[in-house]
Amino acid sequence: MRRNADELAKMRKAGRVVAEIHEATRAVIKPGATTADIDKAARAVLEQRGAGSNFLGYHGFPAVVCTSPNSMIVHGIPSPKVVLEEGDIISVDCGAIIEGYHGDAAYTAPVGEVSAEAARLMEVTEASLFAGIDQLTDGNRLHEVGRAVQAVAEAAGFAVVREYVGHAIGTAMHEEPQVPNYWPGTPGPTLREGMVFAIEPMVNAGGPGTLLLDDGWSVVTSDGRLSAHFEHTIAVTDDGPEVFTVL
Ligand code: MG
Ligand code: MG
Image (cartoon, rainbow, N blue to C red; front, side, top):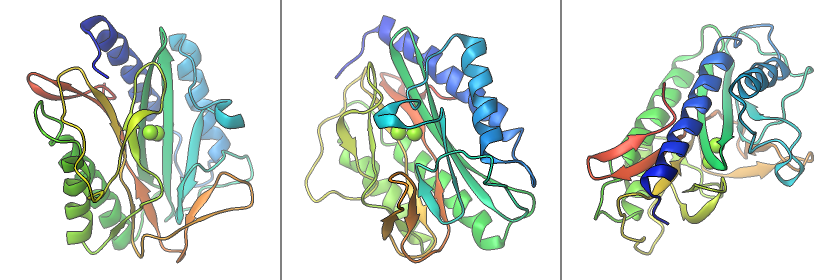
């Protein structure tokens, strides 16, 4: 779906709130902090900005952020019992709603000093996101996003998750079409100015396999190796891609 200038302005505002949540949550990530602390910091920003949460209550999700440490890929539930330790990595995914329009973005951050592999995984995953974003130009085809993400991740010896993908976004967080982080086997739709997508590679240090835990939410790597997740909400404009989820 193509959004008009008024809609894009609202999405820009929602994106900015998400970026503010990223800034506020990054500030609490340190050894000894809990993932509940991350959720609390995010709630404070939403409240301050008068923004709604598109995570809280989503299919019953109990928090405004997903917090997924180490081998957890996505959808981790914040908890006062999950304490961050030196050397961990933590993925934080969150969103905001302003005047009915949605933003959605994620990052993975180090907790203190991390291993060389963890640092490289985060660096490559973020680079794969930006390689995908570069493909969001009017007239290009959507599948080029996944192809670019996959090329960067696999060139580094990592694997992209198949079961969880990006999506169009607007008056709902998850709109059609989906945006796979790999060549989907068939060409995607043609991109047009005004379309908005959340691109979100999940990259595993080992194999691409995933496993859903018994809580019904937490998704981990099937081989127990690390995973990283970076996401932005981006519009296709006549001047190229515009990332909304930045300050
Ligand atoms: Mg997200
Ligand atoms: Mg998303």
